[in-house]
Image 1 (cartoon, one colour):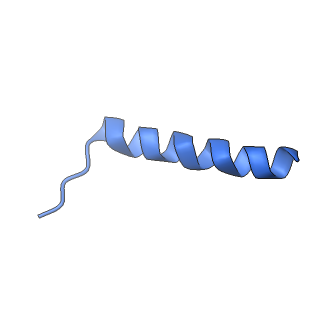
Image 2: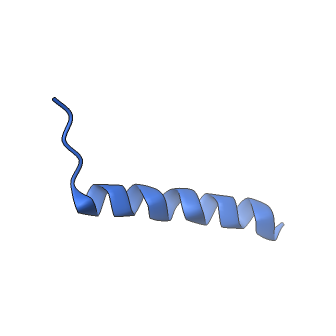
Length: 26
């Protein structure tokens, strides 16, 4: 079973959002 912690999910979302923002900010 794969269990995701709120902290892990938030961390992943933050990373993805940051990378996407970086690409868009170019």
